[in-house]
Image (cartoon, rainbow, N blue to C red):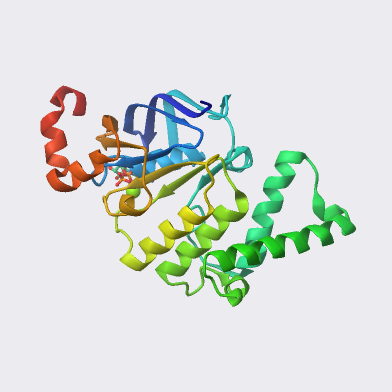
Length: 266
Ligand SMILES: Nc1ncnc2c1ncn2[C@@H]1O[C@H](COP(=O)(O)OP(=O)(O)O)[C@@H](O)[C@H]1O
Ligand SMILES: [Mg+2]
């Protein structure tokens, strides 16, 4: 099995406060992993650190992706290598259509991967835009998204469900090796949840891996993980199969704290 991501003894500080305190995790190609944990345990910190957000300072440990140490890579370079973080662009981008946004994203990744700037060659640019439109339309059809959607400005007036659809489209077009889905603690309503999970299930292939980060068990009813890990106070304190999510739902995070040696958690 190919090791896709290896996180070794990761320590991360945000504004001089240590948030991740020695986290290790290996994800093989094709595996779906879920990280669950109470609010403030460091879930989003992990997602942001993996993507290379500048506010998150790695003080110790390693992140190896596709055999390469990625700590020195910029977020763009990480994306080009095949990492994807949903919620990467949660802001409105007035004047930029979803179509153009996705196209720019795909092109810039292509350019980084191949070293070739397709926009510089008129013929190639024309044929590539045709291919792009065709693919985008196919995916929108598959995901039950109306064609007019790609002509709207990114996130402007998007409902929660529509923002999720835009993300899933991004995931479909960029085809990352590892998709990190951070489902913020506010949680999604049931429709948005269905949108994400149906979309993910339709487009993700067995060669792709997913890291789902969630406070709630319910998302995992739809995106079925192979492994579930529990993050408490910056450390993974439990790992098991999918049934762990159900146990957590039933017994809560206090049960986890009771199970684990307090010297590990504090
Ligand atoms: N950008 C930031 N600035 C200051 N503190 C932060 C920042 N991001 C996270 N933190 C702190 O790190 C801790 C973990 O936060 P976070 O990773 O968002 O947890 P989770 O996603 O598990 O709820 C919290 O105490 C939070 O206040
Ligand atoms: Mg979070």
